[in-house]
Image 1 (tube, rainbow over the protein chains, first blue to last red):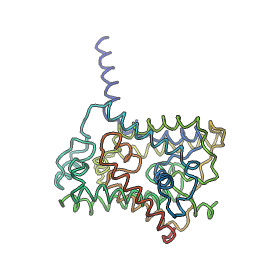
Image 2 (image 1 turned 90 degrees about the vertical axis):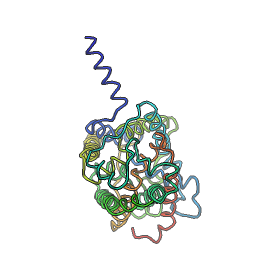
Image 3 (image 1 turned 90 degrees about the horizontal axis):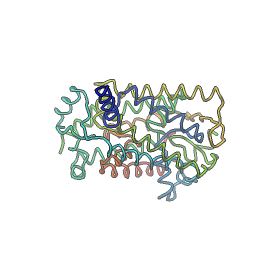
Image 4 (image 1 turned 60 degrees about the horizontal axis):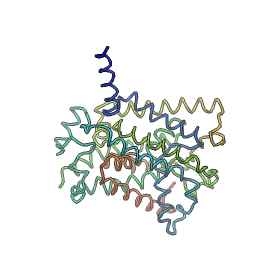
Length: 199
Length: 162
């Protein structure tokens, strides 16, 4: 009995600490679509917050940012603040562990010049010091810019198009998701190998 | 609806100015849901640059399983919600607006641009924020850059094909 209990406890702890299998993580993520609709008829989508923040901080003379961001997006900004908090909680409850990517991916990345697999993202690229290198600058600064520009142009990101949009059978979302992958594949096979190989 | 929304904000979780203001009492609910979402993003490892590389290199089913089962769960829930004609807790009728197709260019081109950024940073907007909380502090720069990118889009918008 005691033995069984211990196993149960261990499993509980690993649930809080370790990574989750896809068939648990996926449905939980999908559940945010009905949850937000049931609470306040809100459509799940994160990237609109980037526009809301622009509208709140520096609308300038740009028409696109001249709208009532409180009315349109306060709920979503509060949701985003929660995401920040949730990331913090997750980062402070689990033991640090390497991301268990496939041996194949590890080998490919090692050939490209990535050797530190201990973090959630490679420390050769995603640290303050690496930001001053070409690869760090391209991945973080240029990459971030493209995320902001692309999601605003496409009117949505992974959450808004790939999850909310596809679940609602929207053709524009399907086109956007095809674009996500086209761009992602191009960057993975043509840009990243050059970038990581560079200083 | 189609033409009118174009001049205004039209983003992820598209909403016009016609949407009702959110009752303040509900804001803590959104905050709690956000905490849950951020926690799940980190625990499921979809915030990991390594996982995104693994996905784009087709070397694991994991990310496809996560996105696929998330879409399936959301689709089934939407179907049920529409069938039952439920009202939201705020009293509003639940309805998911259709997206405005235009000529479709924005979705393909914008989507592709985002895709490049997604592979480079290894993070989409939600994960960028979750990663900052998780301790990858340099992502603050990625978020700032993303805000600049969105702002530049807003500026160039009149000259871009939609």
